[in-house]
Amino acid sequence: MFQPNNKSEVPGLVYLFAHNCSIQLLTSPSVKTAHRRAQVLWTTACPLVRRYNEAMGRTILHLDLDAFFCSVEELHRPELRGKAFAVGGRPDQRGVVASCSYAARRRGVRSAMPMARALRLCPDLIIVTGGYGRYGEISDQVMEELQRVSGLVEQISIDEAFLDISDAPQPPIQIARGLQATIREKLGLPCSIGIASNMLVAKIATEVGKSGARGDSPPCALTMVPQGSEAEFLSPLPAGMLWGVGPKTEARLAELGIQTIGDIARWPEADLVRRLGEWGRDLARRARGEDERPVQTEHEVKSMSQETTFARDVTDDKVLEHTLRDLAAQVGRSLRHSALAGKTVKLKLRWPDFTTLTRQTTLPGMTEDDAEIYATALRLLQQVRKPRQAVRLIGVGVSGLSEPIRQLGLWDQNSERGRRLQAALDELREKYGKDIIQHPRGS
Ligand SMILES: [Mg+2]
Image 1 (cartoon, helix red, strand yellow):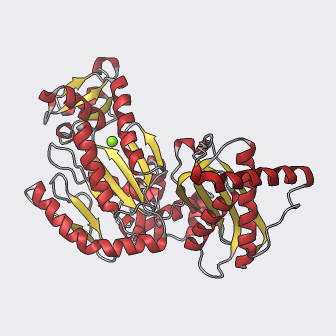
Image 2 (cartoon, helix red, strand yellow):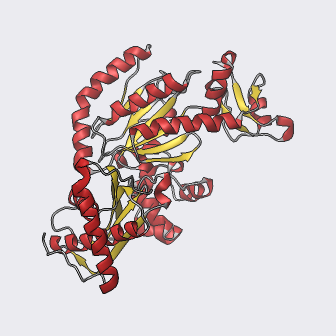
Image 3 (tube, helix red, strand yellow):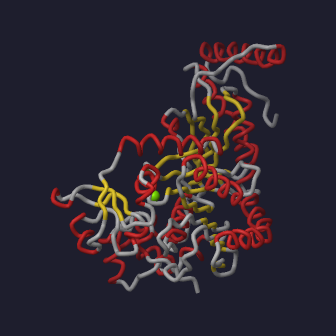
């Protein structure tokens, strides 16, 4: 049985939640040995995990810097290392703890706690007034490192981000270890990582890994939940660990005898909807480990998309492909109209039961080309849709927009010719309506 509060205290520990088994815990008195043993186990488990991710969909990495403000302070004041200290406001000015060292955490100090209370728990607590400007700069440097790994980075706070690494050729654990090493070596900062098939589970994986920290040093945890094990992984965790379950909801759920995420997943969904409204449905989905939100890059606001809801659910491949081609052409046209091109192509699908999912991929270069948008979206559709599976809504979008860079060289003549042809077609469509030129069906 997996118990998140009963873990070893080895920093750099790797937790591997392998499919159809309980948590495998690697403990060792030495970090080096732990890493070596993790590597051996990982090599054995990796092909299995990769097969899952390749067959089923996305790989999302969540990264959280360990006690970020404190770690930055330690860089400038090494004498703080290993000591109980907190960054935050002064206790006589009703200050709160913004971040606290792991030594302080061991004494019960937590972030967001009034500093006066933290001092009562830990009378020798050293209070450090934060250098907030410096934190922002270092956070930017961390995000730059993440950008080198994937074009799909969503920063959610000063010290946390999601990366969509579905397209990366290396195994996720290798990417994660590489990031931890780079951020440690270049910037001197420790971080923890969670990997899963979606954002919800990846973030909780990080939290579970971090909760294993026991000593005075940061956890540097790495936790991976393979595709298909999400519900099993979440099941024993307290309900309050789910996004959107605050103390109020937690209390309401406790009245029903619901303590864990698994209790929510087992509860009849209709009853949750009756008690909590539509939100009950979201809650049930999250408890099952389902989360289809895409990682949204900073440029995401700058995106162009088109979607169609069918009057009747569609199972015919040809109809879907034709619709997709049409939508891709509309998106391409609006891009060219605004003199923009995008890096990321996104496919949106809604099944008859209203579950909605998105898949996206980042192209090697920028595009505003109908055919390339269509081909990319079609590939995503083929990856995600089972044969004859009915579709209620289909959509295509392009994001990561900026002005296209056009360098006309010897090798670009064909694409330049293609671009001119496209411009001429756009002009015709504008004059005579969008149906003036049709792609032959099935081509
Ligand atoms: Mg953090």
